[in-house]
Amino acid sequence: MYAEAMNNFRRSDRVRMTLEASLVNGDKVLDTQTINISDTGVLLKAPVDKSVKFSAGELMQLHIHGFISKKSGKTSVFPVLFVREDEDAIALEFL
Image (cartoon, one colour):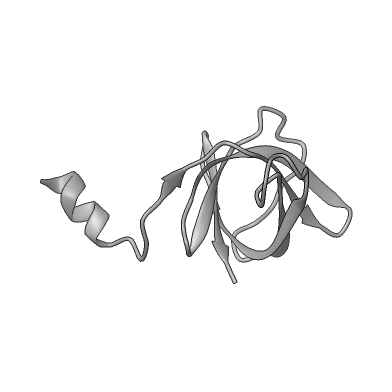
């Protein structure tokens, strides 16, 4: 019941999707993968290499590679807000 209640707080449903992605802010670039995506945001796999750091509230661009069509090899670019990072994941909100 607790998990069901937690789902009620979400603004939109999440879809599990693994795609190559890059977070970009100026000269800082972090290569990673998506875990899940929704209408309001995306959860990314936290990198093993922690040398590139971002902070909560930071505005940046998210490049999702192959998001439109894996066959086309295109990259979709989204403005995002860095929400949080924990040991396993990075949470971003679409702007």
